[in-house]
Image 1 (cartoon, rainbow, N blue to C red):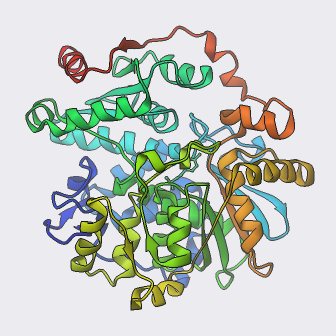
Image 2: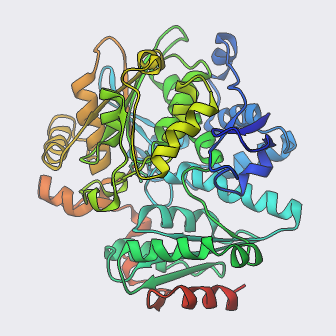
Length: 475
Ligand SMILES: *Cc1c(COP(=O)(O)O)cnc(C)c1O
């Protein structure tokens, strides 16, 4: 299996060669040259597999340059109950992504049972193990540089801690994260994890990362890499739980289900699209956004208009506060019949800060073939849905999952089971839960009192040279 760029101007490469990089050299995103199709017989034979076994079957369709036994070992090491044990019902923890039934035909698929209590752990943990393996095989090292306002940075640190050949330099805005978020990141004592708190905002931290990455000499000398959401391996890892959720919600392969996915960068739902292209019987893929409704607007109108940073709302589902849905280019490539010339044309507008409109093109007419539907949610919808879910089902959900449930209830066809992807645990967004329900969400026992642990963090001015100097001394 080779990987090609959505912009069509980069050579096709095997999996291990695209694993450590970000964008393709032509600025596009990597996708497999074709989607492996899973027939009904194979699908039936996967029904009884454990999460790790299922993951291994799916990964082996996409990865042919890692020996099967090694891929199996990496997958088994990743998807264990030891790592994903924060489930709502401890009796179901072995499922890794247990299904919670709210009522017949309406379910939550729990994806937030990993170490940082958000769905990004599902893929990031695999990435940590894959990176370590591929780097060791090549005798290479990588220094991951990132900026975070909370979720992504902690998922990356928990995935990379203690990994050979990997160092993480994670910038965060000094004093801008919650005490819980700070404790999650800064209490890690692993030698290869460096937290840098910059006196400034998230954007200042992000600008430093961009400036360092734009210094080609420094980037090459210090092997600077990233673990952003456009990484293909992250999408691949996420494909697995669409299959797992399907099996949990159905009794046979002639049934269909729908998924509703709280979306920001289009990474999670892109994996749903890939699962559907592989033949998983998905009726609808529902894209739920918050007030930042770039994606909802596209599915309703055919206009893709990324916002400027200043136009992006700060909301109570902050992990979906995006101005530009980076993974969307992958779906667009498939929508335009995998014609990279068309993608280049559309993204020449996006990259110049503009938008494009497919409404009067045959592509927009083809959209229904891909099963997408969409909707958006606001702060008051979020509060109302958290209350509804608690009062009606006694299930406590986080703000992002609430956006998903709100849209799912709106578009649901009662004849088809609807699975809402649960992307974080309520405790991570305790303030909004307080506002909605006037209660303190319970915290898993392992995370009691983490605010009191010793912290390891370097506080710095937002100065590119100071950050470079720090990286130099610690490599
Ligand atoms: C990242 C994130 C999302 C959005 O996922 P995308 O892949 O960016 O669409 C939703 N909810 C939570 C809790 C997240 O951390």
